[in-house]
Length: 132
Image (cartoon, rainbow, N blue to C red; front, side, top):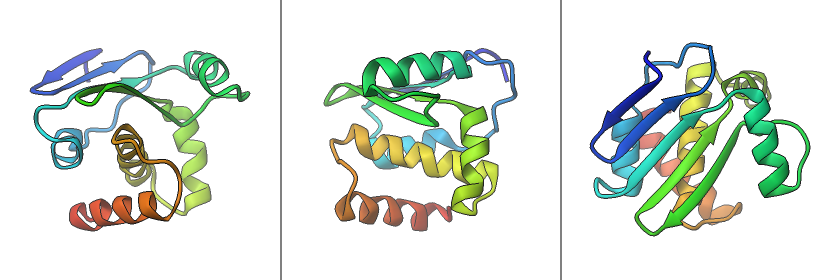
């Protein structure tokens, strides 16, 4: 994968040296946020993820995913693949499955939901629709 890919409503940037799994981020994005929503998906290196996690959440260490809503129609998701690979084991999911699991989670946050039963219900419906 190149360092930058652009689709209608979705820009994917790779800031890490590792490979990015080839997954259907666009279909998930369009279903969850809508075709008009402008989403930037950034695959960050662990250092960048750790800095963002500390700055925005006040927590140490890299985050597997962070969501940044800019407006009702625009936002950014930052994902650390190395952290996601480690965390996937805790959820008994394969690496690729967990990447999609996190992506859905990040998008539901962009829709304005916080952790809880409503958010989990929305995520589960999306996962079922896409077989995740």
